[in-house]
Image 1: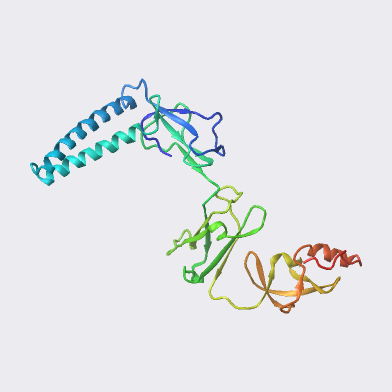
Image 2: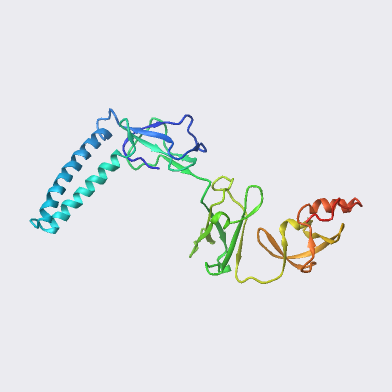
Length: 298
């Protein structure tokens, strides 16, 4: 958010710091130019108002003459243009003004991302005052080697890991893939992929997280949820329900995966039932020589 006029910064929120939660329309700070010998907002408004009223009067007069075909169209259009400029300038100056001060209000619910001025600073029009961020509609930037040949045409999906180490699909909450970089640089020989994440992400902006990208044509194979996997020193296995309360731990060979599912190349047949919730508890129960209390933990 930039200064819309010159003036002295006056914070309107106690202890305004980075990370402070704000509400849409909340008054954050004001710019006061009262007492300044030059660049005084009240003086600028008065001058802009006089110019606007004069331009309006000239516009209305020339409009009547133009409609009566007394003045040419080119002359009327010149006056009309001057009127619109004067009107826009005046409205811009008086917008958000209260008590002679320009008010800076939060444009939406969010939090203070950065503050580039101090309370009491004098700033000129156009200077950045504060940046307001939101947990919604964040942009996820992923990078990968260009030799994969990733394009918008063969990109099938992107998953990212949240703060709880859970894999999320970027299309959740109507997120979408925005763009894919077209070139690389010596300092950064990777292609950038940008996606919009509309789901709430409880992670600081700028955080790093693992990302998985699916591309190319899909192939049919056996797949199970990632939660069903048990890992021991780099080897994977799953708990298969044979019947009733009878379970078997079976090693499997993994193929491709995304954040939610993993391809099984060896060890499982289509139709077999695997434990997806409580697999670790079933494993521990089998090691102790007992069986789970119920045979339908899946």
